[in-house]
Length: 274
Image (cartoon, rainbow, N blue to C red; front, side, top):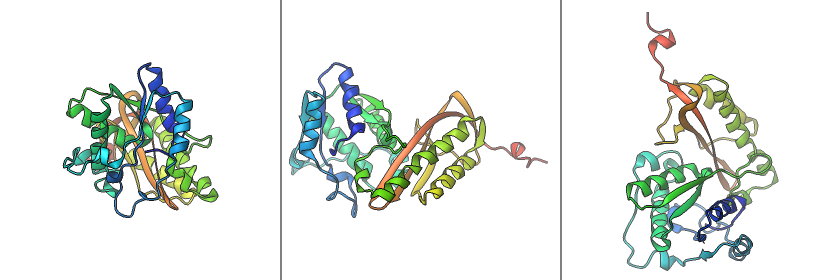
């Protein structure tokens, strides 16, 4: 959506390594913003963005007007199942992912790419778009790219510009907290509930209150029960530890992934069977 930073440029550089024609689209999509959200205030730096992309030697930049993306008679919404879009961010931003999938499908139709690059920083968006492409047999390869972070771990985001100096200092605590949770899981065996409590404890140290903090599968965003036991395993299920943290004018999202075998609680395990 513009206001490009190193996270966006990582997508560009990954695309250029494929040695095809690299097209970057910039469009602040009104349909993925809800009432009271920051559509009007969202950073727009078109000239700066174009200079950055020229330096990266992209082949083309697509800067459509709203009327090109949504003609007057446009009457279609692309909607992915609520099991994927009604959780995590979707629970608090109703309709957001309908706007995302509709505009992405529209841009795919206009540009007709062979590959499209999405960052793990917006993990739910990546998972939802990938599912849309698979279900509609669009024939586009969705290529995930790892999150780019500041030196202190804060995930790069256009909305970081909303933070003042004190908020910026506290925001680094999000990555520390998620890392503490992942570290607990990777040390051997732990309960999912204990992992989430540890993350909350770290967030509280920086006076951060998450809108949500959840552990889900990457495959289908199934929530992991708090009484599940996680055993670190390289061949285990890929899990997503995800959070959204309101901070000043910003709403910061971040996540980390790790693998673990999931063992559901049984009465015998709990010592409840007599």
